[in-house]
Length: 458
Image (cartoon, rainbow, N blue to C red; front, side):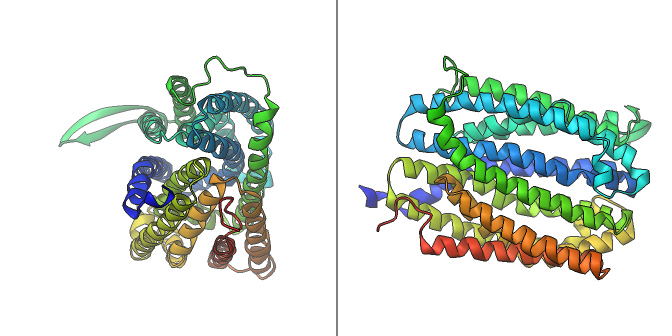
């Protein structure tokens, strides 16, 4: 029975789960592009003000996402083993995690909002606007946590379409509100006809308000979808802490959270050093990061599918299926990311031009994007390997590898070249690329040894 799972079935299952997550990433990235472009048209200072706290956002969102990884591994395995009552009990504990993380990550950011731009070494004239943007963004953090964690629970059950729809709706709300909140009332031409577009003219703060409202929409919708899901609905389950479920979930989630915290804090340190290069370099770095994210869509889109498929095959105790899926995922990812890297390399200036009209920012951003494009396949493989390891709950090694790569390669290298030797943004991105290569090498070595696989033959 174990040998009946074919390459065709593996490809079909990967496509079935991956296409909604890839589409979700496309929609999210498209809105990120639109958001950045709309703010960018105000001017480089506006882009820099938003970019000042971007890595702090990654730090907080990454920590919340890590909680979801713990539930993903547990629920996917329970679903694979057809232990549906256990999956529903775990979903109820995820509700508890949303409440705790939502409250914590509302209070802390609001208290620290005024200080964070200063800690990030932002130019003094950007700090007030950056702090206001950050403060508004974290008022609805409870709903944001619900969107992240409940979306992960739904994906673990095999439902990747609902998170796609919810995130698509969130993005649509965000874009529409941006038009009214960011700009002043103005005349626009539609199909050759001039019409008046009303606006509040709130600038950067308007972008934050639009995002905050979209988070509320997403959180409410995702909670409703979870309650309707027959496999993982928490209806009727207690919200009291359940140690039998929380302990194995936390064994996976804590290393994942530490990884996200360490790497995201590394991003904070990295951006803080880049911010010392001035507003132009900060804007180029912020826009290039946003531009690059579109070309990571296949990697991160397939990562969630990889975790679910590997976790489910673990629950089914199907060694052959797990091996077949992992190999197929890596092959597909390498091919797709090679094509993605080529597109980024040849289209770097065109992509930068979508977000800004500043020629210096465009040239600087295009230069670093071409550099990173050459290593897209390596990074894509690393992303999929993390997804595979997350599916079986092997998060401790990915934590160690990420910390070594981030702090031993990227941060140390950037400190030496940018802070001590006075080099420019190109040197900082070279250190980032070296980090990606080192991480890919360490994860690949662990995969080839096979020790990550609990079903491997002794």
